[in-house]
Image (cartoon, rainbow, N blue to C red; front, side, top):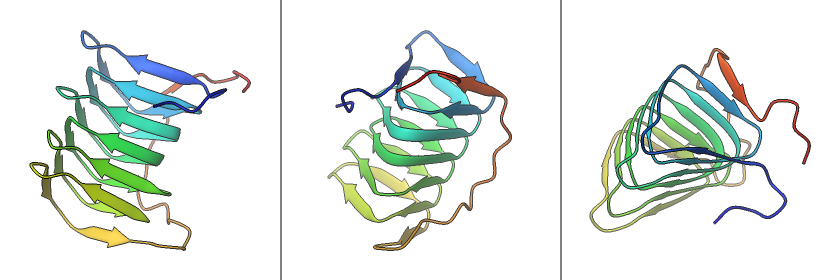
Length: 131
């Protein structure tokens, strides 16, 4: 699921984070995040995970609950267990049967995705790490 030679960070099922995150590599979420996320790689939310905040990423695979807007440079996938309550901006969108999506969808195919989501940096995972 993660790209080879890329940094990966994991938020475990018993972990709850209050604050904004900035990740240079990939991020796998099993737990809860109350804050905005900027991820330069692939953001994956597992079934049972929750994010209450906005997400800006390169690619996203959502299987949990997202209460906030999501912006992706390429692809967003909403699995059958996903619940998105917010607006979505991506070039490619995949929605499986059973997924819940309440918001507006903007497709930006072949265009650079704008930075509509404003975040304030609080925590930075993988900062200073090299690829």
